[in-house]
Image 1 (spheres, helix red, strand yellow):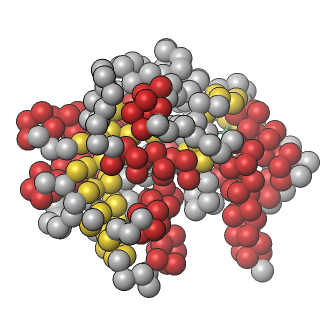
Image 2 (cartoon, rainbow, N blue to C red):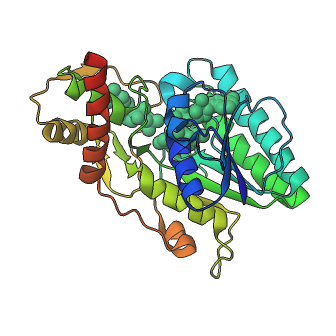
Length: 319
Ligand code: NAD
Ligand code: UDP
């Protein structure tokens, strides 16, 4: 098959491109390089079935493809808040353009949605039928509401135009190829610990997140895209939570990173950003039933792989 991955030069996108090539597909990687890097896919450029295209999803494009993974959108609060209007345009206009393409060429499309559609959740753990608790006028809204309207567009194109859709609600995912200055907690803590700097803990660190290693997530994305039928009471077109249900406080994460980096590190307490969700944990019953999938890589193992990656980068930047 010919598969389009928007945001393919980003963190998750580059792992997905690798995986799709290994499965024998032709892969078209589209990116505007806002938070993605050519370097993330440089090792794929000699592969004849791989093509890299610089393009911004807010502009329409005509391509012949069979499947579309729509990942284009900055994911870290630091980056999506840098130009919030552009973030909304990317989610909304990008989604309309990709759905228009899917409709025209009859491609199946998977949207990289997010646990942020649940906002600061009042239901715990979060199930897909929870409608969420989202501030529509805060600093996270450009991302949260952008992703919510993208889901709305997916469902409307499905109902109105019979576009074959898949919606992945991705929970915090981490691993190699996150940016060093990404701003997200795992990369921040790992890079800080490796450089012997203080770990910047926002708030008290009592807020929780559930961290999924990127290989587990990519496996789930591919299964969701290709699942043919659903068991009784489920539909392949409904949103599916994808994440690792292991829940940790951010303080616990800081301690674990320090332990694994084998460093004595100080913690620097910083203000908690506005609307920072207090707790987050996916209920993955739907993914288990629909995809026969559960994550297999525990936090400690995933962190070790991530630390190895950043240790190399920190070392080469010191040389
Ligand atoms: P990332 O920032 O590394 O990747 C996003 C990619 O999209 C980058 O390569 C960036 O350059 C590209 N991009 C941004 N705006 C674009 C535009 N207008 N046109 C074309 N390309 C554009 O982030 P990631 O963690 O790899 O996230 C990938 C997707 O998964 C995003 O849609 C994100 O919202 C979603 N997601 C990620 C997580 C996570 O924890 N990593 C959680 C929930 C959802
Ligand atoms: N966080 C932190 N220190 C950092 C970066 C983030 O304490 O250097 C906290 C942040 O306040 C949030 C959690 O870690 O409670 C996860 O933040 P991230 O930006 O990774 O993802 P999101 O908030 O979007 O889940």
